[in-house]
Image 1 (cartoon, each protein chain N blue to C red):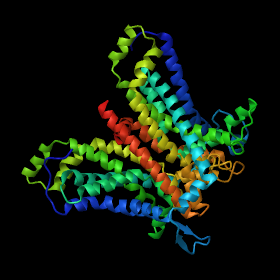
Image 2 (cartoon, rainbow over the protein chains, first blue to last red; image 1 turned 90 degrees about the vertical axis):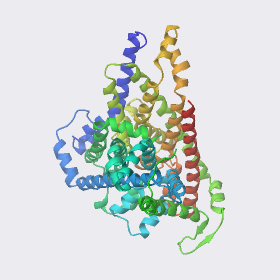
Image 3 (cartoon, chains in turn purple, yellow; image 1 turned 60 degrees about the horizontal axis):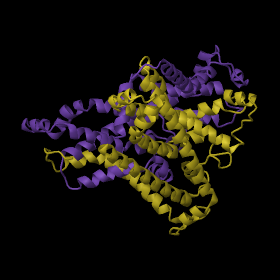
Length: 275
Length: 293
């Protein structure tokens, strides 16, 4: 605080409160819509007071609409993508930093180039590859193409480069094998980077849309994000907005909780992955 | 930077790299190569035969009014998303940097939309602005504004921009706040002692010092608007009405999976890849600058 300007402080609070309200308003309306009957939601304008049908709507969403299974698919998908990415990136970063071998820079650049190819720009050919491999409607097809990530490899490479050389020397003098060094020294040291990356990648995996939209055609393989899209594709007259909104809220809860409760890791992960 | 001390092993490093390289080859290089190859092929209507046509698909593409329109739509969309998103987030970040009481709570309340899936964001705003049941649409029509994004291209564009910006505010806010907090207090105090008003201090000291962050966020937001907003568009307008909100990524998808024009879609993919490369290089230029700064 540089100087006292009470009116400016008040203005700051007012603007921030407006910002918070702007951000929270859709969430509130979603919640209210998910507690009313379909008719109440459809009677424009709907009331902004929560209705009494909360339990009924969420039970219907979870059982009849199959959202329970969708949440399960989303969870598996997000976990496999996050853990898989971290695992293969840790290994490849370890190889690139701690070994000298022919072709090292070639492989490094090969990984680097993938930064420039998001799924969106190569959808049709990637779809064809997955179809040829018979991986449509499977967890492997959902997760594998999203698992390779140059960002994670770079993050771990940056981090490994800051680890003191003395640790490697000590490990070698003690006769530890490379994998032993990796497991007992490097992994424990990387714990914070791993946690930060996990938060970001979990959200990334949970929120995937285009890819699952293409390769899942069976209802029991829909992640919840796709499930919502299928619910609204009939148009206004047939959409049961109360159930759809209950589903939207259920789809939001896991990643939002991860962000709120792991905020410290989340901010670190966000800043680190953009370096 | 390189390690001085390394392990010696003939095969282990290759084994360690194998999983990542395998995934990269199968799911990145192979499809990207296919896209390049397909972009030079012409398939007949029944998909029975293909012939090599060189750069014809590209020439054809840039001769199509629909493709040029899509470029224009993407440009308008990404400029507005980046500009509105950055302006709103900067305002909030400057205010959050100023307040002491409740700063942590404001931060938490502002960053959670980052976690919401773009598709869910699209559904939320679709609901709020749905002409028949949406609470905001009803409010607008009470004010005498006929609202129907399904018929009016500009309104559809406004809808997708609002949804896309809403989602991105949290990200921009976090980076602006970090940038603001790294500006030395002594500079601002010195200016205050010299009698500079808060707005003058902001425009002559804070804003110029923040420019690396702003530039970085500009690039990130353009990339976001180009690619990550696919889900927002698909859930709200499906590129419509007509092609009013059909951005390049949406057109690639639509031409490949609904239009089944693989050659043209592949050529569009190649153009998009070129755009990503340019944007990524711009992003790395920023990192160089940051080091100097």
